[in-house]
Length: 260
Ligand SMILES: [Zn+2]
Image 1 (tube, rainbow, N blue to C red):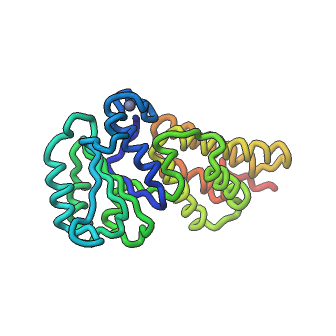
Image 2: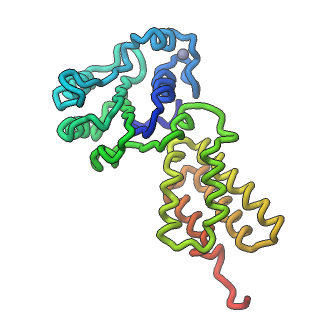
């Protein structure tokens, strides 16, 4: 699998997707989804994968600093038992005490090349900002986009695309810039990001044909530009923010003529 980050915070009830992702990470076929047939996949299904570690609270309902030290820090010091990644899954990450989160932070800040953290939570506000800032934060329902699954007909992308097409023009700058956050879940997957931009492109293209609107034409140009930047591995955030500013009308596609 391409584009693997070291740490993810995943919001919502997505343990199934998270397990599928963990399985895929160590699948010997190294495809975009787990093959299900290799030794790694089969051991994973048996529930005894040596390089998939579930971090749990041993003394109470919360996960304490000692738990993190014994189940993460110590484990991280040794290489994977056999497979490519050592995957740490922390369910109910909001139950990590602040001290435990700080202990975890040190490991996330200087990750071993083989370490991957998957933190699941329903209360993202209980996570320290310092931890969140080091993690790729995946909003509810979009996690499966990273690992696998069909990109077409993705309802979340459709909703975002319709929202932008319906509301972006004339939006104030701050609101337009804040729209970037909705794009963040797609940052790690080039395919997903391009699929989302394709959806926007199609929507604005249709609008342009129906209304002959110069705004829609500007949007189409802005999206084309963003698509090109991303395909050339340009900065994701800059590309998207620039596109949003153009679509909302804050940056003209070219210098505006004084004539109406
Ligand atoms: Zn496999």
